[in-house]
Image (cartoon, rainbow, N blue to C red; front, side, top):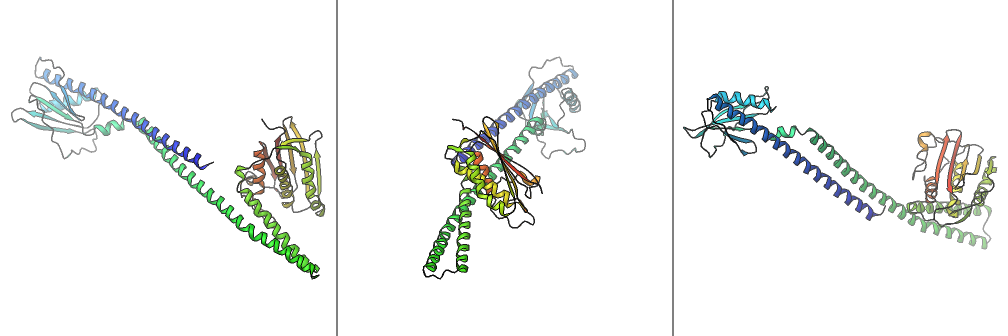
Length: 426
């Protein structure tokens, strides 16, 4: 994925998180406000009834109209216009609050008209195990100097918040999701950075190796010609020059393979008409001698009528050669290799390469197409490579719009099947 695309995705993700957080905060605030409005209305109803009961107890026939005033979010004053009995007030408050199911700590005070001051009444706690009274018990004086009492709810906000269970739960879940997404984005950025470092390292390493390898090949060939011209090239020296050349070519081939693998994510194909049978026969020709030398057998089962498909001949040829070489490498005895070509449906051809090699354990089978992954081979130490062959095979097949699958059983061999389209979509 391009760096610019990652930046755009991260920016959109950040904006989405900010937007979701803002919406959650907006609705949480709205829910709290609704709870507060309901609380205020319930408290005013209870306090109005308390004041009216106080007048009725004093045999005062006055009907109070809107006697409750809210001076602060947690403080209410109630005009009574008559003498207020403190003990009776506490009983009436408790009863009226119970009627509306309001169980919350509160404190009340009564205005002393004679001394023009608030006389603190009591602090009523709903928690019977903790009756601690706040240090500050001063209740503000109302400017309307008349018979009235004041009630304060010190735990109003915390009580309202505790009643917003579903909203608090959803906020907690959202906070968890936000934290998870932030961690995920950090890990994606870190993984992307590590991938870039790995790719740069591979490119730099392979380029640094190519020059000395070329120099070794040129130097060995020059020395061989010089010795030959001077008629000093005996069999032993010729053998050593051959070893130098073959090993340098093998290393150069491996370096080229690593360099190609570093860019397989952007593999480009050259589309053309490909004779699939011809590709299979050429790939088979490259391993027939080795199979014969190891007293093995090659079984070809090519369905008649199949001839050409659309694809990249070079890459498909490399894929077949790679799979056949693996069938030989991971085989301790006489190799028995079967290559089949079938057509499951008119739009698909299937190439299968099966062997009788060491096989692959079930837990390893799903990882064999991963980049740089190599299956542990136990005591088989003659198998060398970088773990790039099957990754290359999968990348080529995927670029062709095909599918690849593998079945295997330890000690009995492996079968790899490739499904390719006979015609690519226009």
